[in-house]
Length: 367
Ligand code: NAD
Ligand code: IPM
Ligand code: MN
Image (cartoon, rainbow, N blue to C red; front, side, top):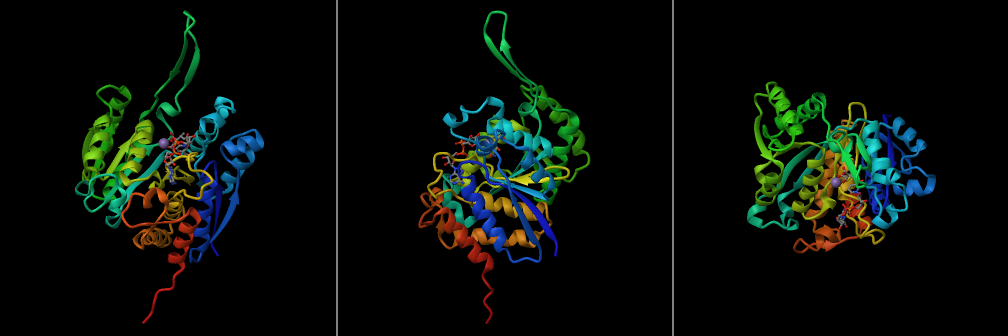
């Protein structure tokens, strides 16, 4: 039997709560393949246990896995400040993970089917039949990974310098991904940039013109990032595939979660040349940790993305998506959404996972 090795990094805050539901769902999936899990510490909890946010043992587990499923990491400001700046979970674990596997292509779907439009804070006439767009974020370049310097100037003032770097190959490869996705969907690509100010965006746009010659069937629409934020709120359905550099993608994808009604609806795939990892787009939600109310959709959706992207199991992936949607369609949601949508019954994190499993394993009714 084909076996896939999964490194499970539950992470911090609500991470372990939603990771348990993701594992429960995958373990229940009717399939001809087998999944072998290895759990490893990662993030703030790993630092407190081992003195490292991304311990060597965890690196080894990830190196040996076919794919990595990661819960959110991050601590409250007070907890984080107990850790040296470069070992804090974001800088000490998450960015090194992205760098190690060169996971340059981050897929962040912003999706709300028509039956669930009441979750969105937007007016019904704006949401229409639902929201379905795909943000593609460059994940291993730009300000996040450029050289950094801190010091004191000759007048005794503290200063910092963080450099936004991209070379043309980094830009070209994410644009190829975006054009290919646009081609698979509606043939329209929105290029999000800040070419009126940043020369990094000027190079980005030049490379886009060059890469575009290979995709003449795809229509390109340019939009400046600040205007894109407004346009997303006023009329998200004018967008289908959007591509952008790292920092713009961080900010606009959280805006995407806002359009849907909760960050708990935001799964993601972080794809590299040889290995990919999957994680919710949101953080460790310290404000709701331990209450059993976190929405596990983002983590279970990340499993669905892993099945399709890393293992080529499209049918199994579709089954997970449809079980997830069916739970909502039957009127259940975790409190982040149940409190918004009309007539939804609130479920705990683990009850939501159980409902997904029930629908995934239900035998088709025969006459
Ligand atoms: P956050 O995304 O953790 O939370 C923002 C809001 O969304 C909170 O009100 C939270 O309760 C809610 N929320 C998020 N996920 C939810 C879910 N699944 N179900 C229900 N509600 C949910 O953002 P923050 O509070 O700014 O950040 C907390 C920590 O997470 C920080 O340390 C940050 O660096 C880290 N972070 C990590 C990742 C990651 O691991 N990829 C991503 C974003 C933030
Ligand atoms: C995300 C997060 C991360 C980012 C942080 C935690 C490093 O906000 O995945 O969106 O900024 O990329
Ligand atoms: Mn973010």
